[in-house]
Length: 518
Ligand code: NAP
Image (cartoon, rainbow, N blue to C red; front, top):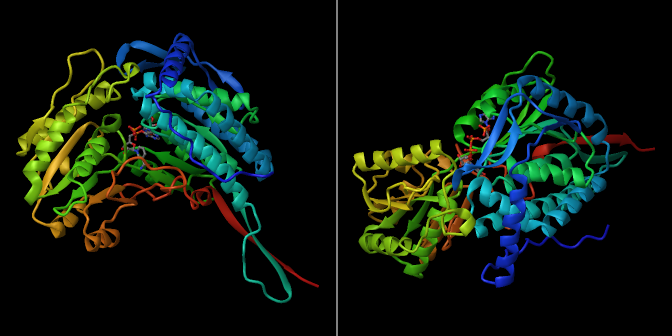
């Protein structure tokens, strides 16, 4: 196979009329799916349950965008057993063949990319550019991991000795339970699933209950490329009801999870306990929450760039990115001016129905909306001052104004806990030393950024800012596959570095074979 070099999928330029028109068409087209009901798929068998999971549009919660099944524990067990049976054959499918499935899937997704993006506009309330970025990332993951498995299955370099022929190779693990979140409901789901299967594992995929509709489109794509039945088994339903069964099953070999710290820690704990019949230590890849900071120093290349970068990182996709800036730590010499500038910039943010492509859409659901509003109240109780936003919008959807709260102290609740919404805490700092201390004062360590023109301070940040993804003089969101391998330290997870050269290693085990030579 002659293979081109990996290149990131370009984003769609929505300033072009043609692109806007095509996207509008895709938005209309996918509505035809709203009335449909979709099954659980185990080993190719389509299964309907008594209880249904109804997926709704967060911009307009009265609008149903698809009906799904509430999987039962029996079906969860069936899915693991089926994946285990399929593994016996799939593990011997050549890496080249497995890579071809991914290339084929990427090709079709690229062709229909607006349809996938349009579905995310309805499913999770992404505006057009955010949805387009999500689809581009999903395509990137498939293109990247397909190339990666070819590298991993190549001859691996080892030291030669006389009298023996030695080789080192990577083999798959077994059945993986893949549990993605709703916030990158295509990219992360596709990345986690395809990394596992291209490495020769089989999978039970349980999508988030907030975004089964986009997950379903990916399952249909896998059917279209004729991925053998049972390689990806798809079970919808509440994580609370079936998650433990999937994680604890003795045939489950690994769990690949992205989501909150709370659930990640639970999975890690349950997976650590060997079950009767289990003959391995389960591997857990858990990518979890963040409390990401931007440091704004007094010595800046551009004040405006620091303001713009902060606002984009705080409010892009309503602040619902694990990498979102939720704390900006500002040197006291420019604190007041910076707060004013943040407010001025945020005034231009329009909030509304994601289908109309505003700057910000809704947050994901009522529970999340309530939680975010509670955090805003808590911030005020603890002495914070709202300088912009702070309220929900009266519309039917789950809309919250972009919110900026100043005078937040480094250990206040909203400076420590992940909010996962459009709320930015502004923290005053005496100097760069203190900024660095504050930046490192949470249990998380996912992303962070520093704006300064002082080279020594940038060097200090490189050495001392303890995050998995550090950005210098740019915003802390927008990681690209291959360019910015992604994953966090501390309670942000196992630092799996999705989209990087180490990632597939998490789904493989190394085998050394030594033969005495004649
Ligand atoms: P979540 O509530 O933890 O849910 C994540 C997934 O876990 C969902 O599919 C959920 O299913 C499932 N789940 C729930 N309870 C479970 C259980 N007991 N056992 C097994 N699975 C269970 O997180 P979320 O709200 O979807 O996503 C937001 C979080 O993800 C944030 O904390 C964000 O920072 C984090 N995140 C991290 C990264 C990263 O790379 N570090 C990337 C994106 C997001 P149900 O929907 O059915 O409950």
